[in-house]
Length: 171
Image (cartoon, rainbow, N blue to C red; front, side):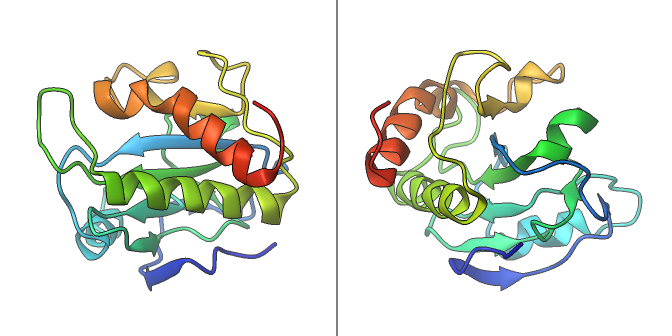
């Protein structure tokens, strides 16, 4: 199992389960609830007693950080079963509050990272079903939260379509 070659910054969190207990077949997207750099996001995931992490983070400049290697399970979606199956990705917001907007650069890099994850892990297509039966999932389906925010949440059909197009399959 490998990690993404798109990673530009690494800060490994102690808050993970090693090794993961399921094959990777899902991607769960979150928002940072702030316009954080990959360094700042990483520093949050190593704070004592934080008890949270994600596999990757993407900042507004499109830089990718890694906080938990793919061979390990992040503590991200408040659902152990999902976290063991999913690669989890935090995406920076370029507007805080409201719809929690995500910029075009971060969104494009998110799609590129999802394509890379699918290719390296044998995920033939991303299925966004609007619930947990698909393999593109939202944090709010597992926890009492609004994450990934209205804007990014509305982009999930587009994300799945773009990823599948780049993988060479129909949505």
